[in-house]
Amino acid sequence: MSPRAATSSRSRAAQGRGAKPPARKAKANSRTAKALSSWADYSEEVELDAVLAHSLEAFVESGYHATSVRDLARRLGQTVPAIYYHHENKQALLVALLSYSIGDLLERAKAAEAEASGDPLRRFELLVHCMVLFAAHRRELAFLDAEIRSLEPANRKAYVAMRDDLEAMLTDAVEEGMRRKVFAKGDAQAVARATITMIRGIANWYRIDGPLDPDSLAKLYVMLSLRLAGATSAR
Image: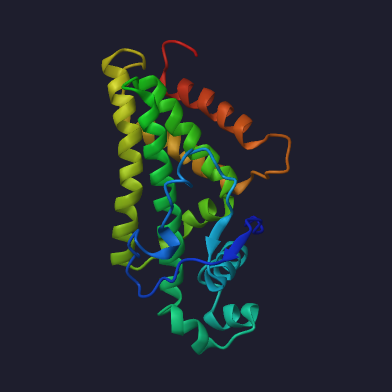
């Protein structure tokens, strides 16, 4: 069952036009240096314009294909042409949301990775911790990743390339860890993919008001991921 939307969204950013994934310079995807002072900081709410905010809720609740632009117009109390004024079509809405989500996660992951100081084990831990926090704090955006199947070919290719960048960061950490013998020898890419798949599942069940707060959840998943990678020593 799709989780009901719980992320608060301000009506201030992201005007995604066209079916091509918007550049990171777009309002929806810009983050100030201050906002990135900590990759684990989620004190600021997600900033989406009203159309994208309602689209996120609708896609999570009903699915992309079951949601029409007319449905979105009713949610907003606007006309269909009013939506098309800012966003070319429904596909453009999905692209804008997914691009915002993966772009934010990648920026956070790069910031987390930078704190590892060349230690592959620490890099792996930080990347896993970062991805879990994102899945917990941005659960609806993380859940929307499943709608990759709804992207048109060119849009899917662009989005997959960004997901591959994230996978490559984790794979590199595992490969380096295997070379230094802090991880058991094996298929580094398979370990990275299994870890990411496990983390993506969080969006299907996690509730931020449940027994596990995001940081505790992240620590649990770091422990599980280290076991999956065959860590030879425990932190």
